[in-house]
Image 1 (cartoon, rainbow, N blue to C red):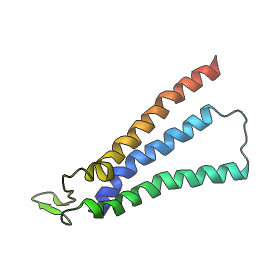
Image 2: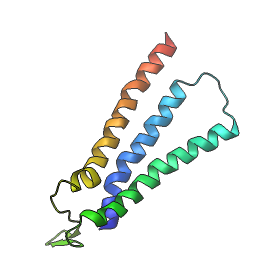
Image 3: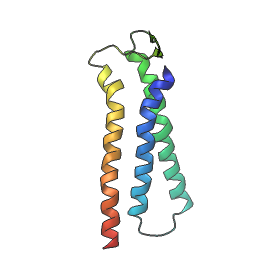
Image 4: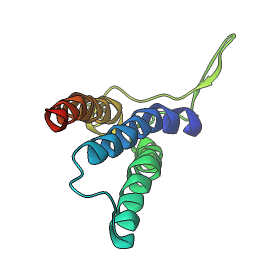
Length: 117
């Protein structure tokens, strides 16, 4: 069940990393980056792509009523108690990451068109 929770956040997080990198390429002013800039970019991508899903898996312990539900023909599925605390700790992260990724997705073609003009 922890893997299901992590993957539900990791897919939008990886989309954010890809769109962020494309936007960085589109708005780049010089061809080569220094080693420190590359290292910083990799660290940020790792924090987004691995750190946020691991944080989500840890935060799930706070809002779980019990470990999992067992559904016929599906198997184990994670649960969350429907409280006010479960929304910011559990349900908002995939939507927030998708929104930021969509923003980068809109800004990237715009940057390419501005550069082309």
